[in-house]
Image 1 (spheres, helix red, strand yellow):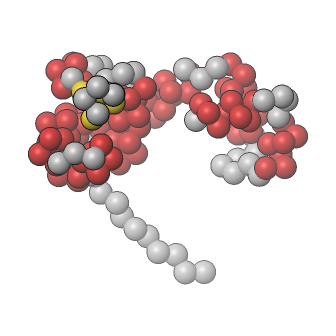
Image 2 (cartoon, one colour):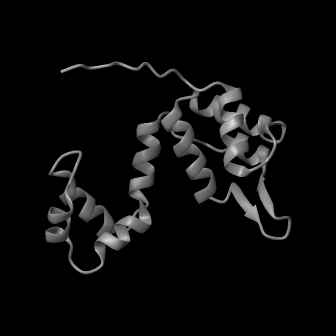
Length: 137
């Protein structure tokens, strides 16, 4: 058994700016201020960055303007936004926003560990819960 360890450090402001510019299809200079705020709030932790960006979108802080045909954000509101102290708290908040039926299905599936195969999910599924889980997570 050959195991390779890969050390992944935190993302820099430039890394986050490139991630944002690629995702939002704008030039990096347009995302520099947003990247600075994201790194300050997340410490550059890659998982935290991604989850924080998802939460900004979910809560309407990051939105696509159909009239302007581009992504928009209010940097002042994002700066002043309270955020969980770490990625675990942010993920917990996200899970708590899920409907009760979805949380129940995830709790049952979690008994089977990090992976739950399709057969077990089908046995646990009552109605349209799996489709609801896919849509929510």
